[in-house]
Length: 103
Image (cartoon, rainbow, N blue to C red; front, side, top):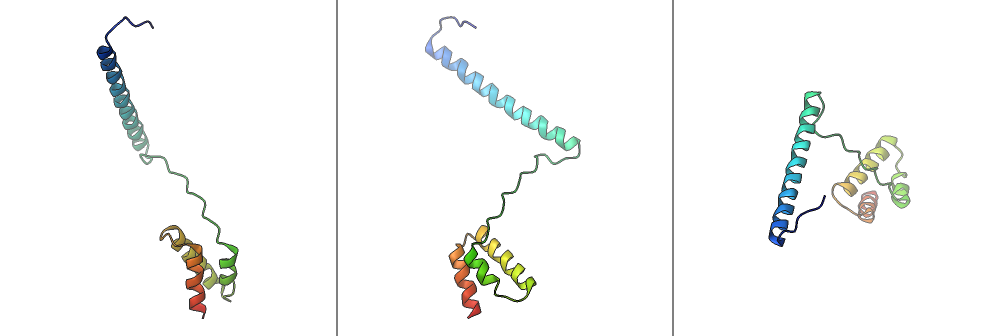
């Protein structure tokens, strides 16, 4: 499409209006999509994929494997993963705490 020669101010106003309308259109599309999903009995947003859990380092796994009970080992693995992912502890800190409890 060929645009007529216009002043820079008029061109900037048109560009701003176009961007505003595109943003508004995106909001309406999002609203319609969420409403449509809700009407069909689904959640408003699709489920997000979980990130895979980080593997426990071999040094820490070796310390955990020293325990005789499988239930205890599994519990310690879960606690270590939670401490690392949620609490932000480093693997070395977790290993030091575990070795301190062993004596």
